[in-house]
Length: 134
Image (cartoon, rainbow, N blue to C red):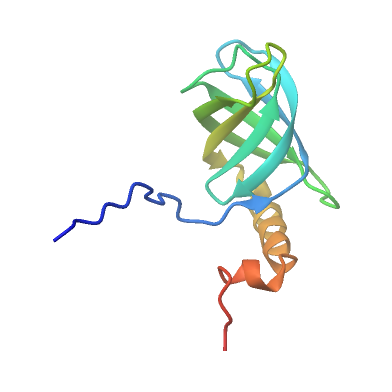
């Protein structure tokens, strides 16, 4: 009898939500600050695109997320968990995956409301994994 092997194991607990917002990050070790475009976000982390070649795995970051219509930016801390070059071109940007380690208490409600709004505005099929809900 043939054995079935699942080569792709989903490790995420939460759906990634498209979030076209800006963020500013500061590398805690180097003190260098950059702006980046967020591609998607979840309660546990964020993926963004940047030209910053010096940023590497395990770097600790301070993040400032510019949430639309929020009175203040959301401040968080996170760690780089993966880095991927988007093409073979020398000038190609990178995607970075950041795992949140902390979100400031004053900003948690703003952050959670933003995530809820993103979920609420997803197309119907995407909200339920493509399944109809009775």
